[in-house]
Image (cartoon, rainbow, N blue to C red):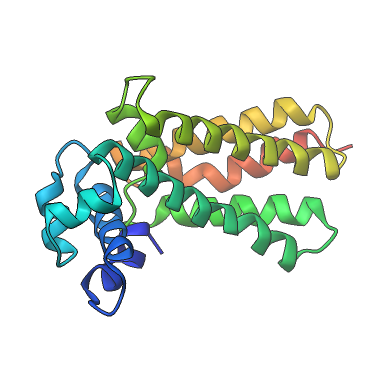
Length: 200
């Protein structure tokens, strides 16, 4: 499920504390419309609160953006635990399941690509508080791929991790620019070929 859909119900439920409603509304609006296009007034309104309450919980819009991305990064991190639980002790199976999950995500017409990659494009200023969140997340994702490739005893695991990482990033952009029936539709097949080429 995309981050916007996960957050929608929380942003409308007044039983939920204001900070959580604000974050849920930000998730929905930033993901759907982009960070630059959404102002704090729209977020406060969607959260059923006001700007004063928003600034009581988040010192600035930039801090809210960083927290939005931290939240999404934590959600994405949950996938690795799911893969490990579904395929305990089998790194090769975890890698294959990761590739299938990513191919499904890319093909989903309700998705708008990777929220963190989208944010990186919108926020070119390296001093923006969200940039560190984005960079840490992307490096960690690539490192987890490399760890799985090593554990699966695949040759040149660092190179394979880079290849898979770049394949996914490119597929996400392709799906957004030319649709999921374009080159991104071959993500699973191309990834399988890459992994097979590094098998002992």
